[in-house]
Length: 83
Image 1: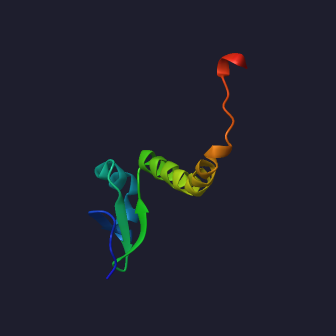
Image 2 (image 1 turned 120 degrees about the horizontal axis):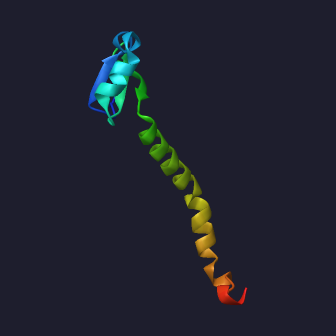
Image 3 (image 1 turned 30 degrees about the horizontal axis):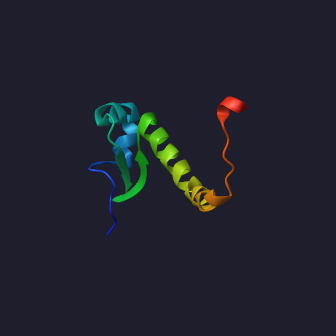
């Protein structure tokens, strides 16, 4: 059994009839578009997609951040007023 990551679903056939209507009715909530009762894709508004993209970028930077934090003892202290 497949786990859906939203409470809203629509068939691909119904989605194709009027995608704009589906988007407006969903509001900020994601919609799973189903093909043969399996999620073919998720439709999300741009604001949510941007937030997910930023989160993914932050997660991708985590290993580098941890590596740099481990080298804190090698840091050089600087006074911004003297620069």
